[in-house]
Amino acid sequence: MADQYAYSGDDKRPTEIPAIRWEEPPEGPVLVLLDQTRLPAEEVELVCTDAPALVEAIRSLAVRGAPLLGIAGAYGVALAAVRGFDVDEAAAALASARPTAVNLALGVRRAQSAHEAALAKGGDVRQAASAALAAARQLHREDAEASARMAEHGLALLDELLPGGGHRILTHCNTGSLVSGGEGTAFAVGLAAHRAGRLRRLWVDETRPLLQGARLTAYEAARSGLAYTLLTDNAAGSLFAAGEVDAVLIGADRITADGSVANKVGSYPLAVLARYHHVPFIVVAPVTTVDPDTPDGASIEVEQRPGHEVTEVVAPQVPVAGAQEAGGGIPVAPLGTQAYNPAFDVTPPELVTAIVTEEGVVSPVTAEALAEVCARSRRVTTG
Image (cartoon, rainbow, N blue to C red; front, side):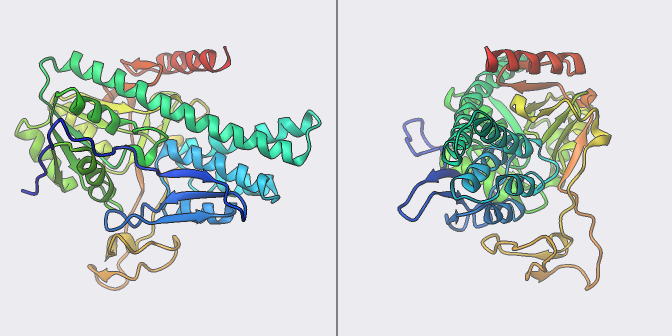
């Protein structure tokens, strides 16, 4: 089978990929993104000069991943403010660009609130723009710090549940530095296990739609020197049956008040398989992904992707320009075939062994435990 073995421990290759950065060239501030639709074929950057360009980048998945979307949303508000565009209009467009990921709207609100507060205190438009940018940069720093703490907590949990090392971890979608201000969420835990010499194998689901596991997680695993193996989503069951999976680690796009977890479609079947085979199913996500205003999984708006992503095969370096446009790929289904293509599914809390956050581990997953970890985070932030 397709396989990639670990590089030696002396390997010093970079693991942090600059997925997003703010730059101020002479012609004016811009937001620079690594175009994730072009990976792994080529590393190409997109330069956004206004909020509409960033909205398109978000919708096309050029920039993606819950924590990074929050950072991008905050920078998008700052970009509108610095360049003199309508901040409220930009904030509304950004916040609605992808409905399932709660971090996006949170990041937008944070920068927008900083902008509004500066104006309310009598600041001019320049001072208000500076406040929005400072809020975005602070969110970026906080996410990097949260990533490091999640990796630490996650590795400790793995060692507690699976003493002796040699972890064989199955992951789904993409949760590394491409989705974060730091080294990611679930992938960061696997990376910490690798650096500690306790990762035996990272099983990487290809992850439909858009093959973000095959294109992005395998890309990050190769860059970081992890021992990894790529598999089709529907092959996971055979791995469990063969006793080849010690733990499942995934990220999250939204965690509701009761602990239901929305993540890339295919996560819920993994949770069911994990429960049947007595394998820990662990979610790694920052506290910002917990949405206390959404009571349960049934209340989550699940994004539906265009059908051509299922009915056609498109080369990864060809960006999808818009949700309603034809993909321009090779048909693999009869013309006119309808496709069911949700971007996410929802895993109920009773199937989740633990949720790892930067503030610690929630296990068992209950509404009360989640509320406590969120309250702890607020005390740290405001203290």
